[in-house]
Length: 118
Ligand code: SF4
Image (cartoon, rainbow, N blue to C red):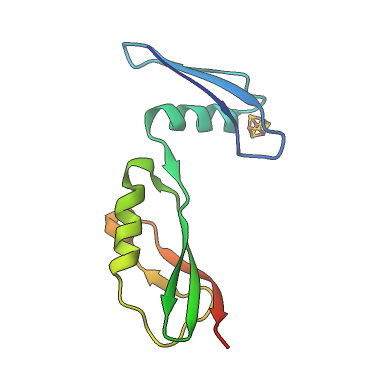
């Protein structure tokens, strides 16, 4: 049996969840106050996902980047490698897609901030 204790992050209330998965693969979630907590708990024990944020240098400074859809936790470092090896342009604007459908995850890497060096 696998057991996780975690805080639901789907809203600011932050319910304490206890999630278990038995040997038959059956999942139980307790401690949630609404269905979103159950969905979050089930996802965390079966296929956890993470939003990735990072920065990258380009000609005039640095850009902040973020996945627009959380990716599987196990792909975290592969996605960071893909961002690192992606060539940069000379100019960016907020909302630009830096990498479309990164590694076939259906998540885009989006520019969320631009920091120009003086
Ligand atoms: S279980 Fe529902 S009420 Fe509790 S933190 Fe998650 S989303 Fe909010």
